Length: 153
Picture 1 (cartoon, rainbow, N blue to C red):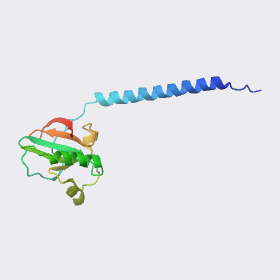
Picture 2: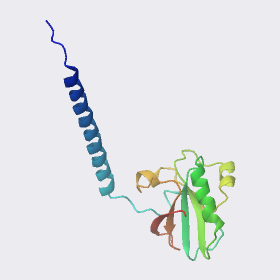
Picture 3: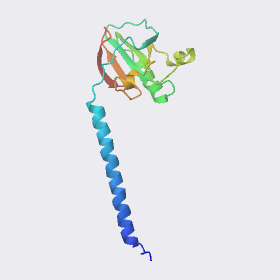
Picture 4: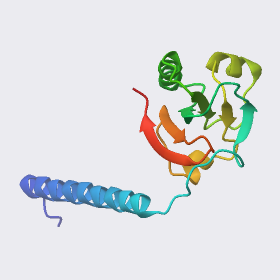
């Protein structure tokens, strides 16, 4: 003969299992975050493996700022527009086209209205540099060396 399951005991067991699963999920998330934060990422740089799609004619005596842009992201386009609307003396503001597997077409380049335009054809921005935030600004000195990353105002 089967014994009846006590409803109070079943609720306690379900609560305990739910708490254990939530705790395990948080521990796993913390572990993955730790692995990501302690990984040694490559330093970003202008030039190969990035592909220069549109060169700039503007002065770069103060350096170059590239906004990480996915052409399908309205937030990215707004960040780029805000930054290019406020020109700074000697500073070039351009775009780094990311997460786009095909070379950007003429319509995409015309919509961005910035130069220089670099294309991350191999996914270095995300995979090797460890960057993931659309609209972030990669700052390079006049020689093309990485200085820092900031966020568009």
